[in-house]
Length: 113
Length: 114
Image 1 (tube, each protein chain N blue to C red):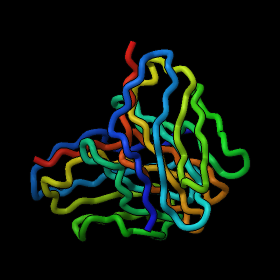
Image 2: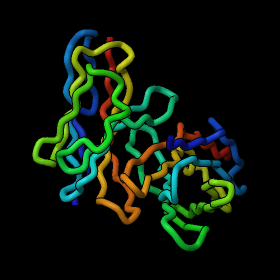
Image 3: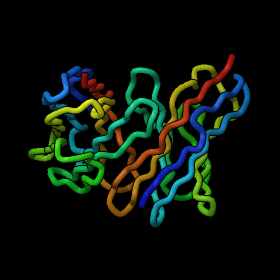
């Protein structure tokens, strides 16, 4: 069965420091991988995706993510965190065979000023 | 281009009542998804339409939930009768088919059953 794991409920990072939000997945074949962000009282916003090719993908707001096939991971990263990055982040996988999309439980990111 | 819209944004109903949530996807998107998030927990998959057909409804909790997508356009999710554990935020998303395109989400409907 497909599954997405985000092992950290919350990540705290000081402003200006690099951040990493972890995601691992279990799905048959080669999935598409996504990161979404949710700000308070808002819907989910797309951040970035991996389809194929270069393992490091860049997205909105300076975020990037690294696809690691051997570790089945797709960790979200940013070199220098901003207080405005504080939000809830969700990792998702999309099955290439049937377009089903499933999500992790989310990680709350706190950027400390 | 209009995004995914959901109605209502909030709903408070009593246990035993019926509620119908509506989702209007982005025009031309064949895929339509329903999800539910209970406070602090995962975004749980409910079901997936491709056009008007239910591709996967494995996440529907029980037969009190009924989703429809007549004509392959907007979708409704009806809960009848509602129970306390049905409370949560119900999200709808739509996407094009294949190619790794991302799904676009609505603002969600916050359902509170009292």
